[in-house]
Length: 95
Ligand SMILES: [Zn+2]
Image (cartoon, rainbow, N blue to C red; front, side):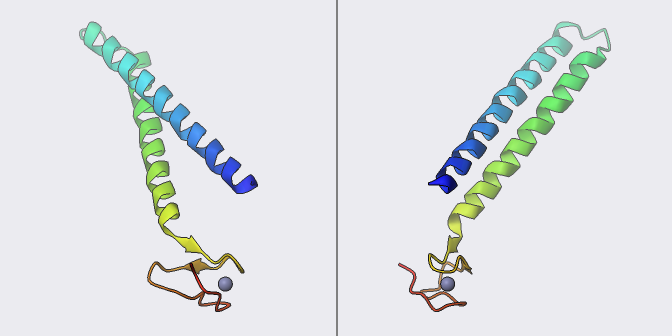
């Protein structure tokens, strides 16, 4: 199923973002703590980009979770509310 593969690819991408984000953030913070008297822009950039990567990954996880809750009609693909038993577009029963 091609749909399952794309979900796996997205998951792999999020995990990669998380790992790189944590690594950049950790290394950057370590660099700043190690040399607090020097303003090291390299480590500041590392911390900033690491934080942004983590934030992006978290937003993607939240969006994926939200997507999982939504149901779609197996017949026409229309988005279906949780409470609905029948598709509002084609009337297909939702099991
Ligand atoms: Zn339908």
